[in-house]
Length: 340
Image (cartoon, rainbow, N blue to C red; front, side, top):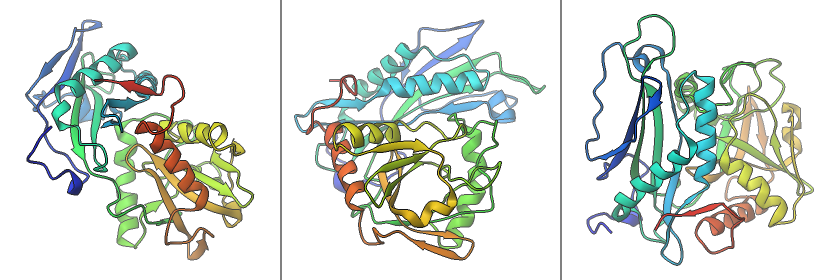
């Protein structure tokens, strides 16, 4: 393990590690793939990714468990989601078994960068793919590169997850038949103006409505949303433009099978916001980010869980899922991939 890193005070940002993986697609097939110490990429000025944003990515973590194993959480789900995204963007899917193998190989080569158990830090893993050859006309690339790099990161929230404030913006996140359900880089580029605008006005994030009717809750710029009703049911919005968060799906399973709670995935209408007891964002980086307030064009909606700490059920969900991830609680079959 690296001795020159202050693991307990690590920020959430990029730090170069020793090794990364790459594989090239050319003439209709992926090559065997390689590990490299070179973090730089050389591209033609007309590369498809630069002209038409033909790129997608995933995010997952490696971490040390309570018994000092190095593991990943459900990497097969990331592999499946990237394959689905690639198909939507007319990119050749990287084989899902090779995706998991590439992730494991990079983590093994960078095992000294995996933070110690109890530090709150993890090794963030970023698989991504892009069109690499020169394309002038608007069409898919002919050549692609799949890569995986890692970076040690500290906890997303220093000092604990304090409830955040959301606003319902006038911007749309995704078109009804667009790319909101896949992890395409272009979705995140489109959200940048909205999030900068939200920060300028004192909000932490945007809570987007469906762009078709602007009556239903969908997700934020970078995370799915879960709600808890006043009678303890865990509810998550259902829509064909929501990215299928691995964390959200895992939390819903935990709620039902570990905590014995009623769960429901359904359309959630904006007018219901006053009826919920708790709300949280869910994703790889923070697992759960509690929400204390929601602003809807000047109308303030205060969640009963408040602005001081996580709600009771949200906290139980967080403790249970992170307990599974860290080896403190027995996981469902196939959820934990032991790397070394």
